[in-house]
Length: 234
Image 1: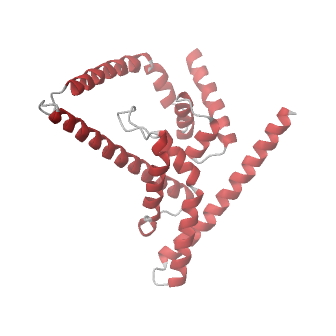
Image 2 (image 1 turned 180 degrees about the vertical axis):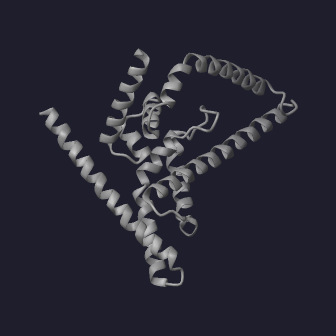
Image 3 (image 1 turned 60 degrees about the vertical axis):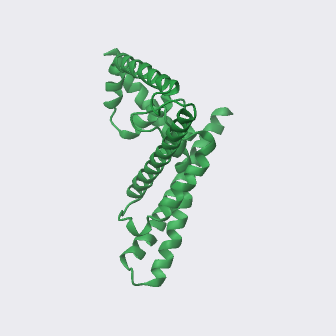
């Protein structure tokens, strides 16, 4: 009975994914038509409405990408759970403003543009938050009568950063072989599925982040793990 339910769910996921894919393609055609005929007000209006619908279809994926975001070279810096919705809204506002600048022709190019906009928005938000925290620390130091930059709190932050750096180097050495094996996986999707799985995310969350179905994610994970085991045993 359980296997039948799983098969039924898998079939449903595939059908739903195909339908959403067709919707994206049809809406993208309308966007391209309006972009290529800027002097036609009717096509431009249709393109704007199609763009808004395209953005709406990306809601779950954008939110998942915001949740999974890690600042480059500083994996401890991320968007806290309580701010995911706010940052996601910033992403949607940014994407809505991309209509005139978008020059892609395929759903894959649209997906890449949205992923880039999401990443940049998350980076901007994290930079603002880090700047605010630095200003607050500086204000506390000055209030306490200590020169900014020489407080005990900053010394402790420096110490923790040094410890984190040492641990990160040790981890890199220990995981070097595995990292190389992961990089040699045949597809980017396989590498991303393994990376996100290792971070503790569920199949549905990974599917939303990568724009795949849950069935695809499970298949990619199975193939990637099988290949990694084969490389380990060689």
